[in-house]
Length: 148
Ligand SMILES: *[C@@H]1O[C@H](CO)[C@@H](O)[C@H](O)[C@H]1NC(C)=O
Image (tube, rainbow, N blue to C red; front, side, top):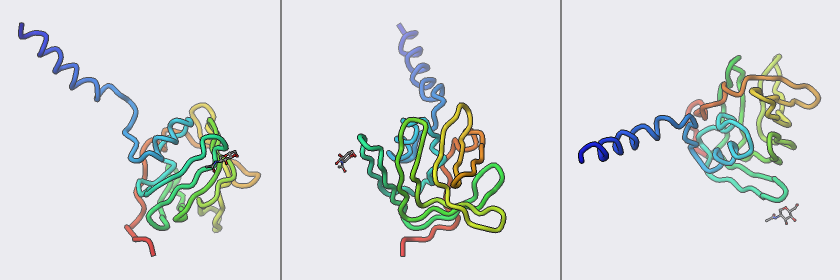
């Protein structure tokens, strides 16, 4: 008689633990995973987003511009208050609002592709490949500036 409730409570404890998916902090992050991208591409400070399911056009509003450090090479990156682009399965194009600092300059990330276990970042014609697992966690913006 006592066995089944005990088993049930053990199962209830185990189920959340056995799920390998990290909990997406917002619906925008969940949307990223629906399209085959890790949640770490967006900082936690997402306030709202819109997505046209037909065209894939999206807008993400952060609570102000955001500066953070991207893994694994600690590139400095900035996110505009408003990020826009076009998303389809495994591909983000016409991206606007994310820039990275490299070779003493700021470069706009124009697209991101998911390729096997890697993410391919497009900076115009140039691409850079990083393991997706580096983006399993949604980063915090440096400092906590409120929107101007
Ligand atoms: C979504 O995209 C489709 C195709 O481009 C367009 O016809 C439609 O008007 C868009 N919907 C909204 C709400 O913007």
